[in-house]
Length: 251
Image (tube, rainbow, N blue to C red):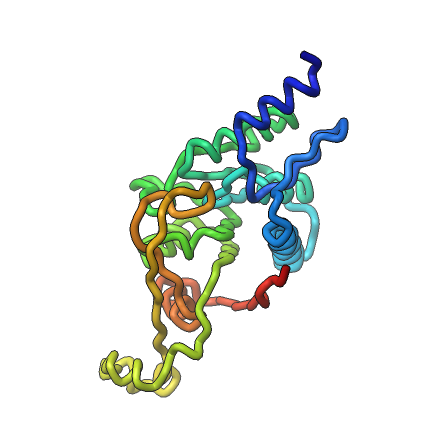
């Protein structure tokens, strides 16, 4: 068996591969076969890089640290590490299968183990000692969780400087007047003019752990409206929050 065939066999054993695009050379490319997912993946990669570039106003981020929550195959930290040569990137991922893929990529490209670190970890159970990072990203994870408040509190504890969350949200049109009436917005906080219309809802649905990119526990997951997410972020301590809305991708 030649080296190319051996490599392809190893890739196939680790598969199926989703949420990633890696050019290994010699005509071997690991990529998501879903064209819509691949389009979305590239858009989010560009979005993350654009935010980091604009926030720091420089490509020199060699003294910064970054953590990717739910890194899956490690695609985003791999791309960000290549782009900025960040001092240290850490990818945390609760699924052993996904972590094995991320480690395969790190080993193949001979990424330095003291600067490119991969850990098995769940954002809902980080433990008492929480490491802090200059930049924390969490793309495509929040809408697969059942406890947004705990997840976002943990993100806040981890973040020194910049936190980027990419998630599916419900339209604010669901924050209707009759919902506000049933919520009985009577707390003294609502007597403050700027708080009068601050409320939001979360839609829960069933989800299994069958797919690599889904929830890790069979049960329910929640999708917030944009206002619900904004309200939660600010109540936790994220005071400077900017919301950007991606339009749905069409096939």
